[in-house]
Image (cartoon, rainbow, N blue to C red):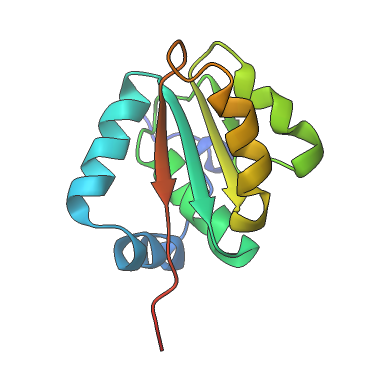
Amino acid sequence: MSQPAILELPYANNSFFQLLLDKLKPDDIITIFTVMMLEKKILLIAPKEEQLLPLSFALHSLIYPFKYCIFVPQLERKDIQMLNIPLGVFFGIVKSDEPSAMEVIEDDVENKPVLFIEVFDEEP
């Protein structure tokens, strides 16, 4: 067995994992990991873009060497309709795009269960 090439490794560094551990409880991380291994639909909602990408990549790297069916660390508002894809998907959105996303999901939430993960900023 050999070590994978550097370009095959998931993109995540220590600061990504530190942010993940600061923002989510260990039980939530385990739940997310389980849902990812089952290839269910996941929607990560972060208050800022600066948090969204590191959190998305840190979560995605947890399942290495497996790959998620469709992994979109930041879904743009114009692509919100992609939430209707009937596959296991991981989407990240910024909190300001949440109303648009909820409209799409609420149309048929019974047939497409979604794990919602919302990250909150700490109060000063």
